[in-house]
Length: 63
Image 1 (tube, one colour):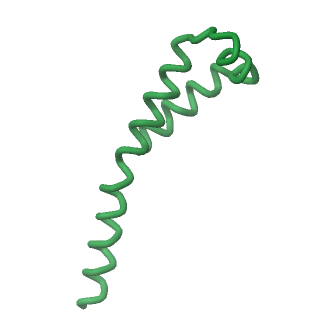
Image 2: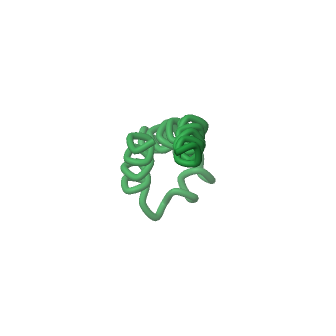
Image 3: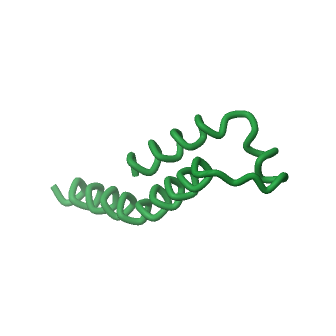
């Protein structure tokens, strides 16, 4: 998840203020791809994180 967030933040820092203008004008660059890849990478790790939290809480209840 952290890698995905770092990729997303890096892409967003590169896209800067012109993100919406780039999309409207169809000027898509590599930074937009990095943002998308980072978002997808972070989003797909959420089920594993939630499962880990559930297992941790379940283990804490049994003790």
